[in-house]
Image (cartoon, rainbow, N blue to C red; front, side):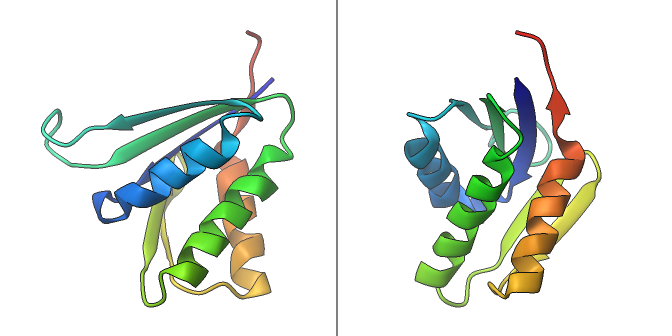
Length: 109
Protein backbone atom coordinates (compact mmCIF):
# COMPACT_ATOMS: atom_id res chain seq x y z
CA UNK A 1 0.00 0.00 0.00
CA UNK A 2 1.07 3.56 -0.61
CA UNK A 3 0.03 6.61 1.43
CA UNK A 4 0.07 10.28 0.48
CA UNK A 5 -0.98 13.22 2.66
CA UNK A 6 -1.26 16.73 1.24
CA UNK A 7 -2.74 19.97 2.49
CA UNK A 8 -4.69 22.28 0.22
CA UNK A 9 -5.48 25.91 0.96
CA UNK A 10 -9.10 26.49 1.99
CA UNK A 11 -9.73 28.67 -1.08
CA UNK A 12 -9.68 25.42 -3.06
CA UNK A 13 -12.08 23.38 -0.94
CA UNK A 14 -13.77 22.27 -4.15
CA UNK A 15 -10.51 20.64 -5.30
CA UNK A 16 -10.46 18.38 -2.23
CA UNK A 17 -14.01 17.30 -3.05
CA UNK A 18 -13.06 16.62 -6.68
CA UNK A 19 -10.07 14.52 -5.59
CA UNK A 20 -12.28 12.56 -3.21
CA UNK A 21 -15.02 12.00 -5.80
CA UNK A 22 -12.68 10.98 -8.61
CA UNK A 23 -10.60 8.58 -6.49
CA UNK A 24 -13.33 7.02 -4.36
CA UNK A 25 -13.52 3.87 -6.52
CA UNK A 26 -9.74 3.50 -6.88
CA UNK A 27 -8.44 3.93 -3.35
CA UNK A 28 -9.21 5.18 0.15
CA UNK A 29 -9.48 8.96 0.44
CA UNK A 30 -10.11 10.94 3.64
CA UNK A 31 -10.65 14.71 3.67
CA UNK A 32 -10.39 16.80 6.84
CA UNK A 33 -11.33 20.46 6.78
CA UNK A 34 -9.44 21.94 9.71
CA UNK A 35 -11.21 25.33 9.59
CA UNK A 36 -11.83 26.33 13.18
CA UNK A 37 -9.91 23.37 14.62
CA UNK A 38 -6.37 24.74 14.47
CA UNK A 39 -4.75 28.16 14.32
CA UNK A 40 -4.27 27.77 10.56
CA UNK A 41 -6.99 26.67 8.18
CA UNK A 42 -6.26 24.01 5.62
CA UNK A 43 -7.85 21.01 4.06
CA UNK A 44 -5.95 17.78 4.60
CA UNK A 45 -6.33 15.06 1.99
CA UNK A 46 -5.02 11.61 2.94
CA UNK A 47 -4.91 8.92 0.27
CA UNK A 48 -4.07 5.22 0.63
CA UNK A 49 -3.70 3.36 -2.65
CA UNK A 50 -2.36 0.04 -3.89
CA UNK A 51 0.49 1.61 -5.88
CA UNK A 52 2.50 4.85 -6.02
CA UNK A 53 1.05 5.38 -9.52
CA UNK A 54 -1.84 7.16 -7.81
CA UNK A 55 0.42 10.23 -7.70
CA UNK A 56 0.08 10.72 -11.47
CA UNK A 57 -3.69 10.48 -11.13
CA UNK A 58 -3.72 13.08 -8.34
CA UNK A 59 -1.53 15.44 -10.42
CA UNK A 60 -3.87 14.95 -13.39
CA UNK A 61 -6.92 15.81 -11.26
CA UNK A 62 -5.19 18.98 -10.03
CA UNK A 63 -4.17 19.86 -13.60
CA UNK A 64 -7.77 19.50 -14.82
CA UNK A 65 -9.04 21.56 -11.86
CA UNK A 66 -6.64 24.40 -12.70
CA UNK A 67 -7.59 24.16 -16.39
CA UNK A 68 -11.31 24.46 -15.60
CA UNK A 69 -10.78 27.23 -13.04
CA UNK A 70 -8.70 29.62 -15.11
CA UNK A 71 -6.76 32.10 -13.00
CA UNK A 72 -6.85 30.01 -9.81
CA UNK A 73 -3.71 29.13 -7.95
CA UNK A 74 -3.60 25.89 -5.97
CA UNK A 75 -1.29 25.75 -2.97
CA UNK A 76 -0.21 22.26 -1.97
CA UNK A 77 1.71 21.48 1.21
CA UNK A 78 3.27 18.24 2.36
CA UNK A 79 6.06 17.23 4.72
CA UNK A 80 8.60 18.62 2.26
CA UNK A 81 7.20 22.15 2.10
CA UNK A 82 4.62 24.29 0.32
CA UNK A 83 4.24 25.06 -3.38
CA UNK A 84 1.77 27.00 -5.48
CA UNK A 85 0.67 25.90 -8.94
CA UNK A 86 -1.18 28.17 -11.33
CA UNK A 87 -0.53 26.69 -14.75
CA UNK A 88 -0.57 23.31 -16.31
CA UNK A 89 2.57 23.08 -18.35
CA UNK A 90 4.19 19.67 -18.66
CA UNK A 91 7.11 20.81 -16.49
CA UNK A 92 4.83 22.11 -13.75
CA UNK A 93 2.76 18.91 -13.67
CA UNK A 94 5.93 16.78 -13.56
CA UNK A 95 7.14 18.97 -10.67
CA UNK A 96 3.77 18.50 -8.93
CA UNK A 97 4.00 14.70 -9.30
CA UNK A 98 7.53 14.69 -7.86
CA UNK A 99 6.47 16.98 -5.00
CA UNK A 100 3.54 14.74 -4.05
CA UNK A 101 5.71 11.62 -4.39
CA UNK A 102 8.32 13.05 -1.98
CA UNK A 103 5.83 12.88 0.88
CA UNK A 104 4.40 9.51 -0.08
CA UNK A 105 5.43 6.36 1.69
CA UNK A 106 4.76 2.66 1.67
CA UNK A 107 2.54 1.50 4.49
CA UNK A 108 1.36 -1.85 5.79
CA UNK A 109 -2.33 -1.91 6.44
